[in-house]
Amino acid sequence: MNLLQDLLPMDSLEGQLLLASEHLVDPNFAKTVVLLIQHSDQGALGVILNRPTSKTVRELWHELGQPPCPCQQPVHLGGPVSGPLMALHDQAALAEVEIVPGVYFAAKKPHLDALVQQADSPLKLFVGHAGWGPGQLEAELAQGAWRPVPAAVALVFDDLPDLWQRLWQSLPNPGLASLLHLKHVPPDPSLN
Image 1 (cartoon, rainbow, N blue to C red):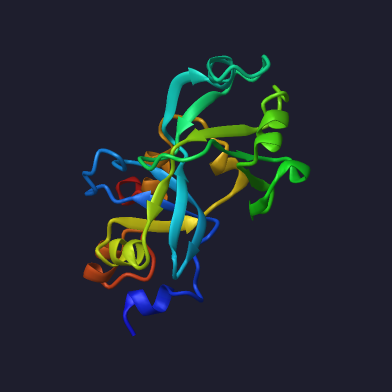
Image 2: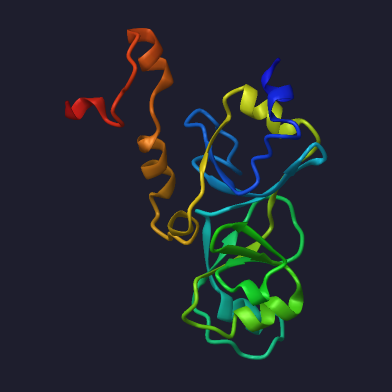
């Protein structure tokens, strides 16, 4: 079996993070961390977690002519595909689906309206998203463009600018391990 057959559709990567390879030069995805919201044989949809914009949710809400909101979180660029506003948050009652335990997804306007009124709750609001057609993500995975890693609440809501670098450095180096026939390679072999 090849990688494409291995991933479709039984091994959905929904709820996983995709780390862009350090060799991925597409400016839309260079050094990005994408959370996959949907993944099936019909394609995939995700949002880039580490691309905050300089605009706050409060400013965006004002521009959209919506009632004032207290949310000062940055608006995130979810990817190059336009579409409705989407949010990741921690409120089960305001969600369409739970992506990973404790991380919920919303795109319905009443849910978004309620979420932006809660200034202290974890929230990432996205304009745009990342999208792949049938088999496209699997082909990119086979080419080594992405490395899937498990998602966690802390990683999803992390706003540190070096999220990609920290996650990338934590990955084992399969090339080094196979070349040296090692069973375990520490995240930073230079520290040995």
